[in-house]
Image (cartoon, rainbow, N blue to C red; front, side, top):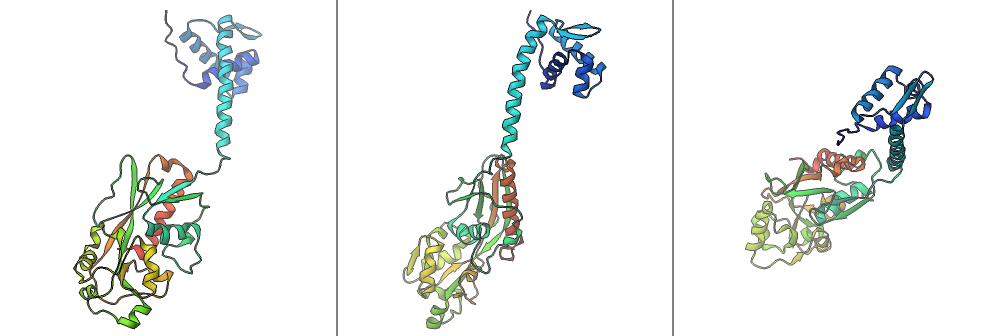
Length: 310
């Protein structure tokens, strides 16, 4: 006959061990913080499911039967494993938080996320570091989409970020772009009157912007210019030096002047150039407390910043 007995939980084994260790149900009940009637009833229920008596009852107490000894031998082994598991789980509290990887574009990492989370010598940056209320875990950064525990994603206005699985997504603002030049450039060439006039100026194009549909007005200007751009920069950082040296005009977020006062936003009226910003992380990774705190903090820093409000 095949037994259909199933151990309900660790407490069943713990109850049997206590009865054997203390030599009776009354002492076992006292050690477990139960009453004797409850212990007697639970032991009887286990015996009924097993189909064999596990204890011999006497007025002086109770002792295991041969069947009980067989069960207790395995219950003691289970107790050893449970204690090892409890010790391992208790030790997790002493482990350092995991390294959190943040993915974003080069510009967002360089000028926003890294200065905000790791500190910046600049007197002013677009994100308020005072919103960091807990220690920041070890951080790593990548520009490869989908490789970060937390991702800052830019999309065309109205588009949702392309994510897969059980991912939490939060819209954290809008990043606008404006035509900029340096003080040195404007002293030589003057302020352009119209956006269309920029086509006649030496332009500094940024290659990573070319696939962003929201910047099509700028792309159209570059393509219609009578001469090719003076410079096609790989990314935002590589355009900084030629911009400051007065080599031409480009588009950057308006907070760029916080990092270098020589950057001047043109007063030329330009069409709206903007992308939506989103914060995303997988639901499984957000179960890690340190990562969840960082996710919420980073989102708050963007939402609270006047530079990213629609």
